[in-house]
Length: 68
Image (tube, rainbow, N blue to C red):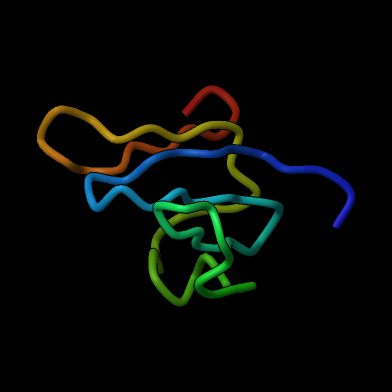
C-alpha cells in the first residue's frame, strides 16, 4: 500500500482506514482488528477508490468520490 485515501472514526469508536479498493479496521486503542477487506464486500454499491469519508450525526458513513 502506498497511500491512504481516507480515515474516519465510526460511532463504535473504531477507526476505518481506506486505501484504493480495501479498508482496515483499527480498535479504539488503534491496534489492527481486521483487514485488508474489499470495500465492495461491505458496501456493494460504492465505487472505488474513494476520496473522503465521514460519519454524520445519524451515525451513517458518507463517502465522496470525485464530484459525487
